[in-house]
Amino acid sequence: MSILQGKRLLCATDLSHPDLNTERVALTFAKQLGCSLTFVHVLEDAPLFLGPMPFEEGQKWEQLETRYRGELLAQTQMKAEKALSVLHSEGEHFQVHVKLGNAENEILGILEAEEKKYGAVIIGRHHHARLYTALFGSVAQRIAEQSPIPVVILPISEKKLPLEIKNIGLATALRPDTQLSEALLREFLAADAQRKTVAHIAHCFERVAPGYSGFETTDAYSTYRELEMIYDMAESRLERAVQERARLLTEEGYHGQGHLLVGHADEELLNFVVDNKIDLMIFGRHAEEGAHRFHLGRMVNRFLRKATCLVVVG
Image (cartoon, rainbow, N blue to C red; front, side, top):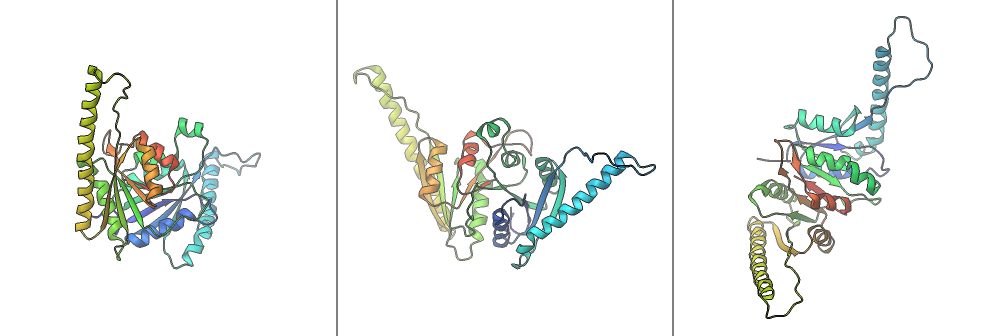
């Protein structure tokens, strides 16, 4: 069953970047995956204050507020369509919707109401003060945690993002519940008709063997050496497992490479992205409470804050 191909992508846009980076990446994704595209722009709702103004006879405040919000949505719809019209001129087709309210709630409301219609949601990140992000998180992060469908998160960048994906990374836990993220990887690989895209499957192994500086004749030293042997065997088995995943991709006609990263997970993955020139990184999610509640984990959250590539959370 296809996760993305043939479905509609939802791209959240605030129209803040003059080069329309997020929007162009979304169009590229839609074209490569054979998807249709809908842009949604959420206008943050605020208490209505029009100052001293005369009421018409018999008019109520609720009527005035409804008329004002309707006019505001109509004007914003026109502005959004005008801002995105340059993409129409490039031969691309899409829909534009404008909502009034809280961005996070409106986007999640669309996804939950029409979950089967959409294959993924695309959202860009913006700079926030570290303290603010630590206390409240970001809209992109909260949507990634609560969305019932995969989320594509664009990195913070003042430069044009690459529209051609040459290297795709998959951070795998080597567990049975990572099937969704591996299915996403295969869909992105299948979208490349020339089969030039390279898949890099990475698993991070954090060795936590204690350091030892005592005499070699003590029981503590023997325990330390036993732990080292256990970790060596575990590392060898994980290496074989990662290479096996890459081999299966190669047998399917794709280009697969396996990487076992040893060290602190988020630091090793950030270095892995740079060393292998990763354009798109895929992470899996694990169900926590009910069908629509997911847990990203601290490592993924830290990676998202520093990522220099596109990130898909499936």
